[in-house]
Image (cartoon, rainbow, N blue to C red):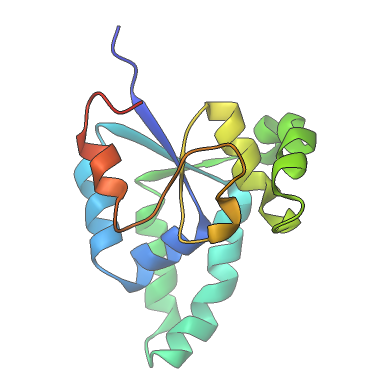
Length: 145
């Protein structure tokens, strides 16, 4: 039985999909082979960050918000009701680094999936992490768990 690969996406990756090209392209390219998920909190966080980032880059924040909605076609939001049972275990793993990141760790525990992030706070939490410069190794390799 061939189980679909899973990958939990951090808010900073959602923002890279909005303001860059490569991340959006990878999500689109691998959407049929990988279940991309993120806690609902990450979409909310990305929405909060779009206006200031867009202003800094002299871009239209409404356009950024629209791109984030397009990203949601590739990245499945996970409702808190599904991952909140893992809050204690997630907080224990991330508490010393950034306790606000517990929803990402909890979602990764729920789905038994690695995390795609640029945030070094996740390193050492006991869950595999992939950064954007290396994530395609995981995405394109069928034998990579």
